[in-house]
Image 1: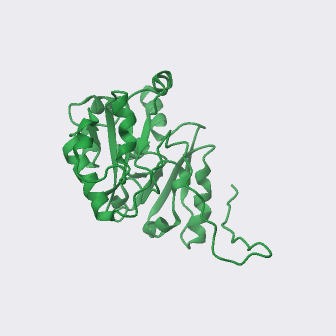
Image 2: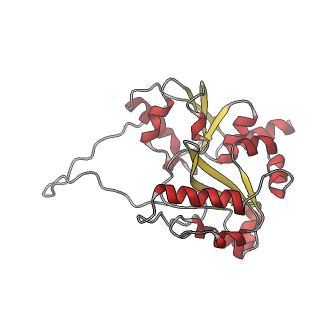
Image 3: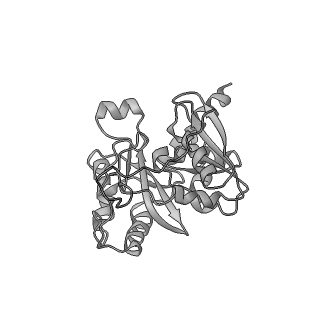
Length: 263
């Protein structure tokens, strides 16, 4: 196994060293067709979180006894597990436009694509210190169905991802499985582990690494994941190298779980 370590770029000759170059946000393969809208600098973080709270409480509903729960059960995840981690179901986004405040600035207007297509959605709030700071959604179509209807399967509020999904669970955990998605993280939780997820490994931030201090960390990824450089980033930060659970290329933890059920 080769480990890549971060290196510091030398400033180009003739140019003053004015700090690291800031790359524009890119769309991860895992955040399929997401709209990168960002959050308005005019809106405070509390205002954005208040809008997310209102969306989750007034536009969304409990996951219990919904097509969303049926979808999750088909993936081996029960409604209680999802509900306890804040997963919600939204049958109709019409109520979104009635919310007070600027939903465009909070990134919620990106979800209009699902309303236009008449698609109900699962909602995965990313919660930090008990407040929603980012929203990821997915419709219930398969990839083939979504491609045929020319609609995305995943949409999120855009901008930088401020935390991992289920991030607050890290503090009290002994072992943490870092997964490349919310469904895989829920699969880990269903199996009795502490799972956290993110919408693509490129979104993982070094600022989160110290939250794993003293934890037994396991990276769950497929054979071709770009996330393996996270091992070197943990070592660079002075933490032990995470263990790695390498699955078949293109497969996630939930896919593995489904195969073991059939076997």
